[in-house]
Amino acid sequence: MVRLRGICARAVAAAGAAILCACAPALIERPAPPSALAPQATAFELTGRLSARRGSDALSANFRWTHEAERDELDLSSPLGQTIARLSGDASGVHLQTPDGKVATASDWAALTTRALGWPLPVAGLAFWIQGAPRDGVPAAVERASDGMPAALRQDGWSVVYQAFERGSDGVSRPKRLTLDYADVELRIAVDSWR
Image 1 (cartoon, helix red, strand yellow):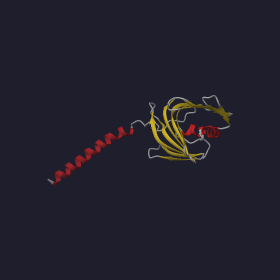
Image 2 (cartoon, rainbow, N blue to C red; image 1 turned 90 degrees about the horizontal axis):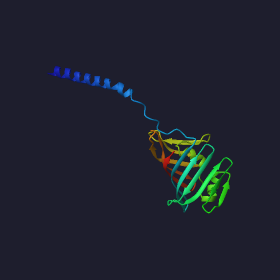
Image 3 (tube, one colour; image 1 turned 90 degrees about the vertical axis):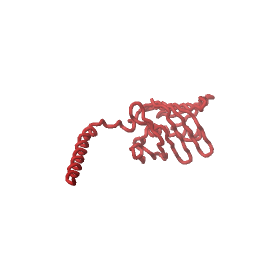
Image 4 (cartoon, rainbow, N blue to C red; image 1 turned 45 degrees about the vertical axis):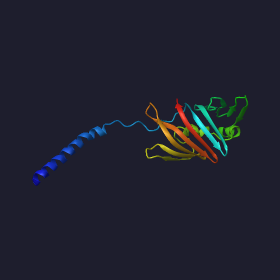
């Protein structure tokens, strides 16, 4: 009886090993998963919502941002759809126009938005950060989550925390919600659509 149990136990173990070996090629031949983060785009258009807070001042707005390699255009509107400001710029300078026709100009985005809106909008860095990557050629620290996606990024004095990603129909993920902090400024961005 003891001998029969030993034979049965060895037979069951051999059958289990055979089944596992038969399954192994199927595990190896499975296609690789799609890349986790979308490759960086040099041009994009996105829409979303942002809120800015500096001390006791706060602003909530919808935005449409068109980014090209050499030029950016950013429209800010109230939650009810009224235009707050239209910003545009390139290497030669940036300008902001309000609904009443007033125009402000500056040499860079941070100077213009600090003066006109009361808080800096780091468009040059944000073009990279909104894609989950640091700006090229500038020192940065990137922390990754256990799944390999960026969790936080520090660059140009800004701290960027990635709170959510969304996987598109192309199988790659893009940041959906992020928070940026710089000195006494906090920006929260929620992306609604990418193109």
